[in-house]
Image 1 (cartoon, rainbow, N blue to C red):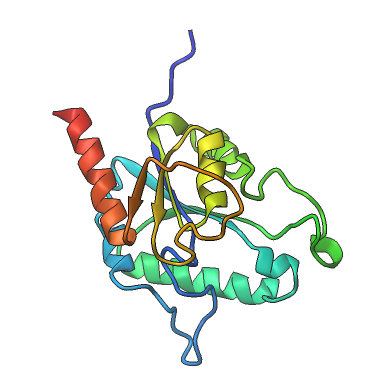
Image 2 (tube, rainbow, N blue to C red; image 1 turned 120 degrees about the vertical axis):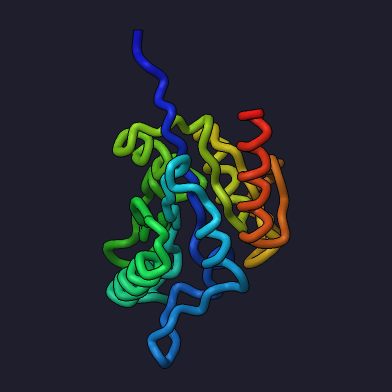
Length: 192
């Protein structure tokens, strides 16, 4: 009989959740949202692996260059490392069925598809039913629901007001700080 994985993942979108925009400012700094770095530091790395799960429609339509996003991700990972926060992997999908050039195609990894979560499950032996997604769009929530993750919709970023899909997240929180507190509270209640 196959063993059910017990490893948990906590996935989050970048813009609207952790940063204002996935672009470095003029000084080369990252525009973090208030208390976002501190929130990520409150996640127990012995319990959760951290993952970025992002659909990059801005790359698909030419509003953000792929190389600029790569530079941003490198800076983001350096800052996380400096803060003692381990990001296991950044999953990003630059494709869209109406995108431009080589980015014009559909992909199972583009939210609201569950491909990012399924890939992480295979690569890291995760139990998705014990994992979480923190996002700011209805696509974030729907993708996670399709993969059977717990879902938290934030009021930051688009705050679920994109009206693309009708979803019922497990929780709605003001920001990443409160979302992490909710996850920690929920997980603690399962242990006592």
